[in-house]
Image 1 (cartoon, helix red, strand yellow):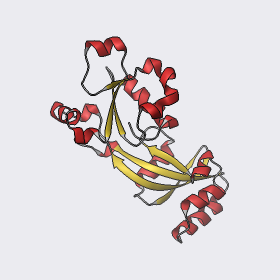
Image 2 (tube, helix red, strand yellow):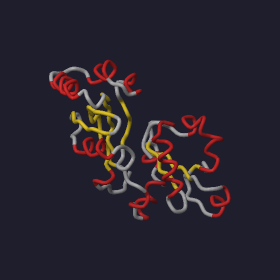
Image 3 (cartoon, helix red, strand yellow):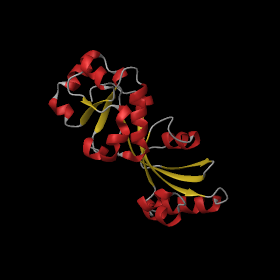
Image 4 (cartoon, one colour):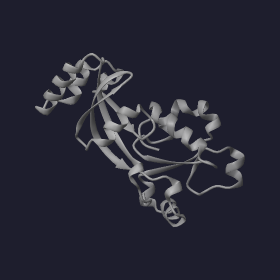
Length: 197
């Protein structure tokens, strides 16, 4: 995407091993095993009390303000491939940062960058454009290339969201003031599909 990103736009792909709060020695033991080359996924499947254990502890992409502050602080401070730890109300988290990327929002794009994005077929191969406003708003004004998926009808089409949205692509969401697009992004981050909005 052509837009410029700042540090606030960094998102990290994370996995964790969740342990009870009284398992400090176990957390240290797991960190030592990881430092010695043990596979994070295997240790997560064996020791984590989180439902993500069956996926090797993978939680998906994490953006700021969407999870426990202590967890976020640790994850965003760690480098890609790094192992860190956080304590939250749920327990002890041994965290691995799997990847990172930077994303921009429409608000950060100047008009020339937005115009370039929606008229560049090469860019649109990696990005999908979604308008979550109502039909009457869409018919009054629209930006070419955006697919209409009104948030008010989310329950009607959410069952086949992966058929409507490619989970491997980044998604740009458009609405009038930003509230509905933020709600759409939050719903998608909760596991309806993978990817970043």
